[in-house]
Image (cartoon, rainbow over all chains, first blue to last red; front, side, top):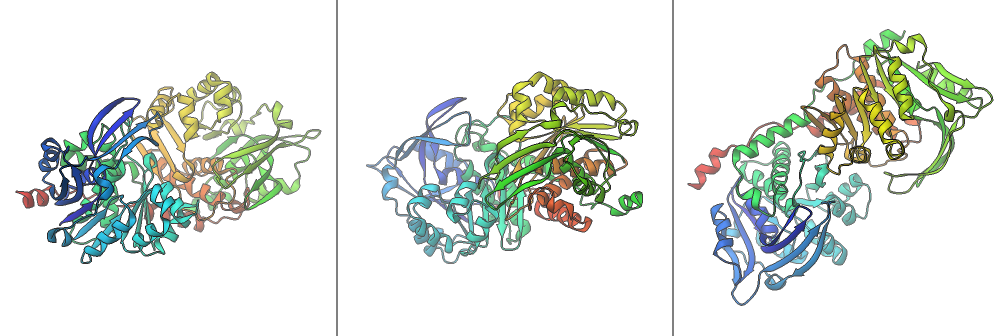
Length: 315
Length: 315
């Protein structure tokens, strides 16, 4: 059931209309692994500086996430991001980015990591994603995330990375930008033509969709009255999605659909509080309860319209 | 099974990146009734000018829609709207609005119309909506649509009209504006507190949602590779929704959920061609086929995550 994630481990400073945090645990690999850890065994490959202390590592340990492949650069500082959200919580305004030790990050995988069944390539430079992918050639399923920065600056490298993976997990605007196509259905078809078997599109408050060559699956977001801090929601979604896949003996369309729901469930908890605060103290009962909530809010009976009554009444 | 609609009957001139039409049949009551006519008997209350000819009336007659309450002002001209859509087909840019005979529209209901079981108050001045509503006091279910123009200029009149109806069918931005609340879930709760038993929110390419006091239902839009002309999509949705409700002997949550699907199905056809062109030649087989498509693209099995395996592996 092993799942590997390669990505950033960071400190975030976040300001929203509802409050702020000056230094909290963040980064794609952090949000992903805390979420996935509810479903399966997770290993993290990343890098931190000497300022990354026992307190931060304890969060991973508490969730039994394997951090032995997290490199520690004693003389360096951990990746730092500062951002602000306005009342439109859909857009993060970056105020400061200090890559620090992350600038020279070259993922080093232990033998155990190389043998992972599933792999998630978090949002890092796409050539690095490809290098990691080549080291996990025996993996059953490899997924990646990317972002507008890489799509704008090195689009061919992004396509190269996508060619080597099974699943692409990105947001709505990124999918359209990546394909150069405003219509999402056409964009999805184009991205799938590069090789992946599935494209998962995150749509924030509008939910998520999954495209394969022959199928389409779409779900709403869990209805929340208060979104507090969306930082890490995308990686938390990916963690729930990949974690659930890893927990299952075989991966097919039905399993992937349930994984979409678990991803959405995890993301819905993530945004309720700052950073990792809400997900850190989640329970399996809470997760399954919200999973059933998704069933309730999407279910309808497939009874077609009976034409006969209408026609009889007319003639 | 009778269904009444009060609204505009118009001529539209529309320009999109994919083509244009100089004068085509349009208006809220037109789109609504053509859509609802696939499910039930529909009567239209509206007004047209002397320029509204046999050819236009023939479209209604072909679909066996009762137009005996459509008033004809021989010396006047029919309501005319000219609009343009750019590649972002979500926003209509109004280039010209000539209310003509519609400016003095005072809906006159025949006795038969007053006895309608279901009533849809299309987007007209909210005080007129209330007047009509008072004339159909025996109706089982009354729904209304409105628009940002009325919400901005006469918000109290809009609220007054809403207080008297059972269902409000508006779009996402209108719901937020109406409630003065950016969070849709909170906005919905506020609107429902004014009296309606259900709020239906249309979200364009992101689908639709239905709120009641105790339930939430959300569906994606039907995935379309080409949206040609969105004019009338909202009224076509409302027509499918109300038409299906009218076709059923009793209205409950399960029926309303299927009505949401039929509304979405009808709207998805509407946008595939200009104006009423696609809906005019639809078949029941096409409608039911797309209805089943909605089931396929939203279905998942409600199997919760089995915590046992995860916990056993950990200890």
